[in-house]
Image (cartoon, rainbow, N blue to C red; front, side):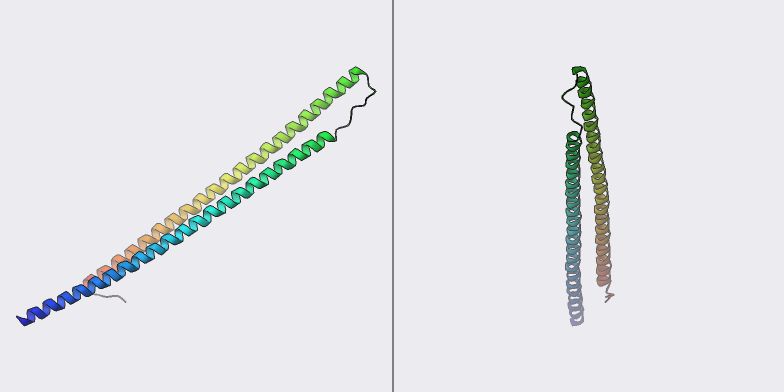
Length: 168
């Protein structure tokens, strides 16, 4: 009878020991997962911050480029030759008409240039967003893979503890 009690006590001690080891492994797993998630969140934030910064820089560059085009436009218009005062009304009207056309051409070119700058900026921002999406997706897949590895490792360790073959 006392041998049975000893075996039961020993079995209970082993069970308690296994439970303790498993809960220690569980805590370790949870801590690893927490660290992985925190690191992924930090990486995602860095990626977002970088996107925001680069996007703002592109907007500023685009804006100053368009401003320069506007200044050049005004400068080109200001540098058009004056229409002499002592001309016949017909000649003066003809020159005024030519001047109006030149100004319209200059404005048209400036408008096209501004549109080209806007389009280039849109393309650059789109490309930037695409590359950021790829980076974010990589963070997501790396995190999933790391989590799976930690869980898999935990499963192997708990199975080893339960079966009694402790791996150290």
